[in-house]
Length: 420
Image (cartoon, rainbow, N blue to C red):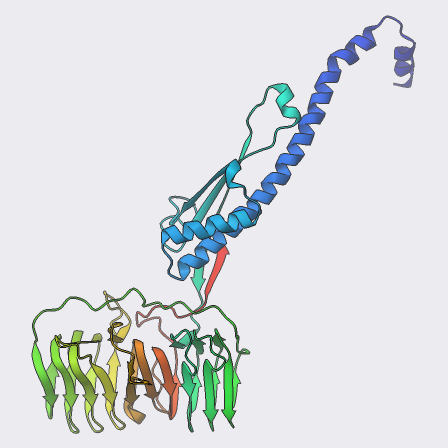
């Protein structure tokens, strides 16, 4: 090879110059294309970062109940924040994606970015247009973490554990209030729970004993209300009016105008189905017995705008289980979200003071009013979700969220992840 190279250097025939002249444009062109390709690769990486951020932001806002138009706007905003120039390309947001990972999943958001690439040396070779297309799909998951949720966005003591309560929970507490006293634990309370997610802060007063498996998380985004889309169904004429049970009786699903009252000594069985309480109260006295499987109790108003409230007194013997399927899957008590929240300056409170013989499985949902719950210290409900504008815990209670067979929605923090 060394000899051949020396021969080429001594050659005076001019062939080398011709070869170099012919190959130099090709070599130079390859070098120039290499420069352009490096720029394009860098642009693609930056654009992938933008599309990933856009998909994650869109999926997170979808999880919090925003519509497609808002999700699209949020995804576009985050794409631009991360380097995408809408004047130099296009963005497409699909919710749900039409194909690929997340196809048909209403919680998934797909974002596609198409951007025109800068042309440097490649245009000398006749190329006028180059584009890059990147895409990302993000979905959400909910950790089934909580069984208590205080919905009010600003109230102090949106979840309030007070007095001499002894509360043992195999699940967590979520509070959407941004108050400095959003989760208030006061008195000689002894509380054990798995976790706490609080938009505001936790307030301790008195001498409480607080045991969380994980340290409470403060300053958190609000937890998604899984039942926010439910509404009172249309209903017809009264099935019964001002119903009072004094002895043994079996009731059928229907419209109970004026509510339902059970006197001490009453023994009520509810057949499976939906019970609409229109006005009056749902009042179960101490010493009364109430049983029902696959039942949903809906609390709304009568023609005069009087909304049903709940009063379950201490000593009531109750076992109620929500349906595991159907339109009202997992819902045990549902309060009309149009019900008034306050009477004067005081929040309207629904009391569940059943004592040692109260077992409720399903969601107890009061988005406009407060729930005051005193369960029992020896018998725990397998699956009980307490969701109210305010949730007040008193007395001795056990709560669990073994809800796989009860049809309830997952109550947890929305977490987003890239699917593609």
